[in-house]
Length: 543
Image (cartoon, rainbow, N blue to C red; front, side, top):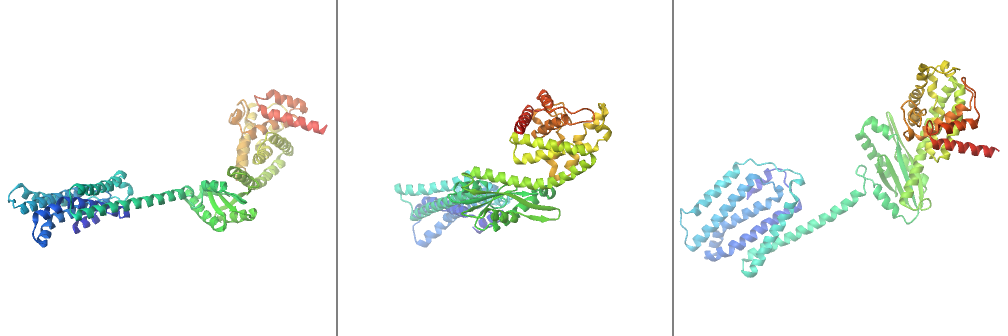
């Protein structure tokens, strides 16, 4: 028995969980009950004599049975990875047990004779055990996946069935009391195992519910939990949605592992700072705070934004936020999140546009020094473009971008010589090739300011045509950004009604007719229709 235990310990890190312990006990008790039912009563009756003589005679077969029970009991601890050594060892012990049992029966009956096949049983058993010792034991894997699920289920069911069979057999043919006691103990162990599995399942369900509503990185509640909490709100509440500013640049500079570590730190800081409110991570670099009851939303937002702030060498992380009061401003979870997101994004755009405005003003100043007439032109284009954008229902942040694109769409012309810009006759092919570069030059100049990168991309497309014959990329139709389509049409109208070195200005009606003629070829029909509608309404109001 000590050798069996030592062999099990030598075969790697075994499974020492409570279920494995119970499985081992169930197997050992079931084998003991079956062996006692089969051997104990008949051997006692056949042996007779004093108690000491009976105990001595029973020691051999019952010792073998105990060894078999022990081997079966350690199987769950080895995750059922027995290998040849364990199989041969078990087989050798079983052979010994059979030989000992038959020997004892023959001795009790007075029929034992030496030199028969029975005597070979001990030799065979010893040889098989020796062969087991010759095997190289394999280390047991430590993963729970090592034991097949069906084995974990079949093992206790099979041995529990053996215990039930012993009890049923006792109804027809009495077995020894020891067998009944072992069978009853086995069934009690099976019931205990069922109880442990039930408790584990309940705990697993509870963990699953927690994991389903918890962000794995920060440990904060997640979006699923937020939606459920918002739907359960029955009183006044304040929702603050926050989005990190500068996180993408941090991630690109320092890597995703550093980005995850930053999110984890900021999430912990947010959770500590909001007190009785609940902090959530919505995903990515977006967080949220929900406070039940009456609360100062702006103060809560400032506290949360302060927690979501970190700076260092080469980076600065801050946050933008949107605040919603429930149920005054939103009736359901989706409405609250949508409104908070809109307000948060508007604040983010204002911050971006603040930096963008500074960069834009510098570029416009440089353009004014180069060509004062161009500044007047882009100002007129921007004014009209914003009116068209409002007429078409563009969102606030799109209007901000539209204004920047309209004001900066000719910045690239600072690189074009005056001889070309002010030439009174038609341009030759080489001069046109120079002009066609101005949107690309403008993109490079504007893109040098990170706050204006989206504007730079739009400026690149302000000379594309609806029919695909424009430049520099030959985009067509709705592949051209709407902001660029608006600026293209407004730029053309402004150019037609203004004096140019190579032609006189035309009246507004003529210019509008020209836009109509080119709608669907050079310009977007919807944009042209919006221009006519806006300018016609302006004329009517002026009249």
